[in-house]
Amino acid sequence: MSIGPSQSGAPPQIGPYLCRGLLALGGESAVWTSETAQGWLAINIARRPEASDALERSAEFLRQNPHPHLPRLLDAGIYASSLSWFATDFVEGRSLDQWVAGRNPTWPARIGVALELVDVLAHLHRHGRVHGDLKPGNVIVDENDHITLFDLGGGEAGTVQVTPGFAAPELLAGAAPTVKSDVWALGASLHAAFAGEPSLDTHDPVALMGRTGRLVPLPLSAWCCDVPDGLDALLLEMQRTDPRGRPSLDAVGQRLAAMLDREPRRAPFAQRATRVALRLALAEAQAGPLSVNLYGAFGSGRKALIEDLRVAVRHDPCATEVQSVLEANALLSRQSRKIPVWITDDPQQAEQRAEAWRASGTASLVVVWSTWPVTLPGNHRSLAVEPWTSADVATLARALNRRTPRPWETAQSCLGLPRRILKALDLPLEASRLPADAQRVLDELRGRPGWTPTTTLQRALDLGNVALIDALETLVAEGLATFGPWSRSAAAVDTPDA
Image (cartoon, rainbow, N blue to C red):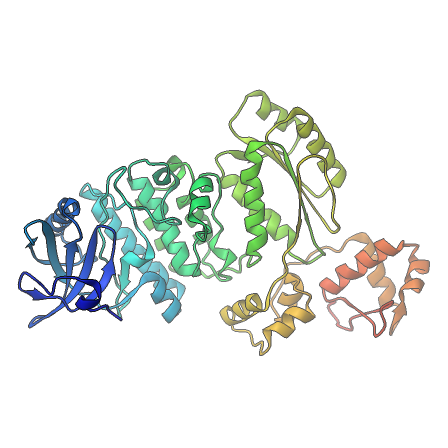
């Protein structure tokens, strides 16, 4: 609902136009609606004399460089001797993020809108104008799914107003807006609109401005389970910390166009809190040696989270993954600005690396993923793998057209384990080789119809209690076995392909 003139103290009339309602209010200008015989107009008014020059430049740009996805300039003038204003067509529609949330458009429709946004940004750049403050609220999508960019930006270093979460790291550091900073903002805007959440946490803008240069954004697939192949990587590349690593707008347009005919792929999904914790650890490790233990049951998504961390390392200009001691030593001997990141599932190997780098005070990160908690020397973090929630189950089922009337029951009965939830939704899974102990327990259970006491399994297989429970948890996570009506018994699930 628009705000009336009496509510805001705005002038009742600008030139020949009577102001009816407030559309947008920024630090430098306000946008009002006005009804005329030719239809509704949008009136942009400078809020203070110092903002008038920028508003006049915007009006002149629209006059000289019209574009299908920019508003059409209709009139311009001066109000109260010092405040510039100009009038354009009024565009009926919703902001980019509201359009996605309200319409839930198909991926081809979303990609089409993104391509139009690339086109109009390229138009600005060709004519020597950089936006500087692009965000979803600046983009209106009409009923025919076409966009209009109604804010031209165009601020200069020290004067541009940036929006946390949509401003490139160099803008937060005080640099002038550039074509590359617009690419960053475009990637962040598309992510926020498609995911419904920004790629960086904007709940604490002060903290964000301090760490955004070291924090790799989350991929779109942390929110969307049916992302077109290649879109995750493209948005992350557009939001690289180093402007030199970002693609050009032409390359962005070409890669988006290639996605129009691609089938969505099921990407790693959810578990955002754990992903953020791993990225924060990566940022913290720049200041000194840090070790992290990511632990969770078989089927809890550890491998997907580790692969997500590897993607973050590849996009971090201050880190690189090393596979051997020789590689790590070579990196350190060169005094590279990149820190070594060692990722392993071997606790002993992780402990040796963590101890060596702790003793030398080397800025570094050691990550070991395991079933049970492992404590490493020095500055250490333990991260339990975050389970899937009922909201995650509902999102996945809705996106992939699977029926699940009670998502919370599915999440609870599957212990929040992704592999088990995917099986419950009858989704195909890549084969995952069972650990040796788990395979031995499964073979023993299949040879014993009905419930088998765990003490019997221990004697038959010569397994310790911890090893047996670990194997049984693996089988339960895979849906291959179940615990019995009393706590110390188990049975194989009677399915032909188990």
